Image (cartoon, rainbow, N blue to C red; front, side):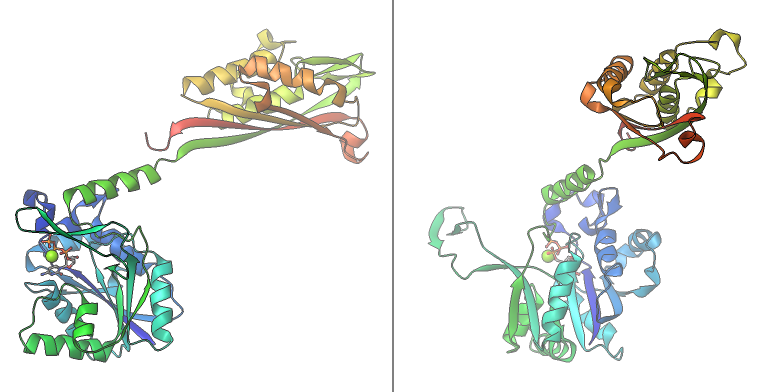
Length: 401
Ligand code: CTP
Ligand code: MG
């Protein structure tokens, strides 16, 4: 199966109003022209069947708009454009004519004004064609109660909605069959078909329904375009979550105890270092600074500076938290792993977490302290030192805002 794609984009979008804003298929949604989303859906589709060619049918007045819209699409060289006609039907025929001689066996005809078409829908249509169907129409069962009204807007009757469907695109066909049907319709002066499944129906080609999707809407009115824009903008609002890691080691020397996470634990050794040598708080300080590119602990508290001699490391951590908050950060998690053969950390864990919670001014469930031994291996195993690894998670608002 060799599939050609025809995307019709030559309409004037009269129902969308505001002609000064240009045709609807070139108006921006989520910062990009509608048609760019549509084309991108086909360009990034990787079907098991071969997509031979993508023909876009455009209006002669729109050549500049079209060139700009496809400019930053990768693989844009796979797209060819031809000029459309006065009706959708004529535009489709122009697209089908452009596929003559290309060797396509099947064609999928799609409205440029349906930018949310999903790959899954394209796959379903291609699969049904591959099973031998002459025509495939994605459609949604009508859910609203249907009314027929007269020209003055007075209801005349309620139309039963059973077995009624709203037709979507892309509609898939055997290429030669739909081309012949279009040519026959044009020759016999029928120019009023608004989709290709109705031409197929007129020509006696069997068309199979396949489930459409609720997101595959056609942008028709100004409100449709505004809603599409809002939908994409909401999707793009990613929270700016950043994680930073920190690592620190201090040597153990004979002494009377170690300070970890600000808690003094009596022990037959102490940690040597310029400050109180609290490896855990040092690692976490680095992790916090790393969430906003603020360097490391040594940049802010140089060991060469006598004022930090013997200092309580909670000062360093509180300062890092202040820097993070000054940059608009909200600290959402602080996690420390201690690697030490001794002393036992477990009895002090909750006091340590309480300390972190107070220094960082966040709730205790956002503060985690874990500990492991080093299985008596290496310098930690020989009780020559204690190491700490920390991870900080900070949210800096919304990306791009
Ligand atoms: N179309 C086309 N050539 C035309 C008319 C329509 O290629 N002469 C395309 C439109 O660009 C659109 C698709 O067919 O992608 C579906 O048509 P519709 O939603 O009706 O778009 P417009 O005809 O542009 O809008 P309106 O009917 O409101 O004027
Ligand atoms: Mg139209």
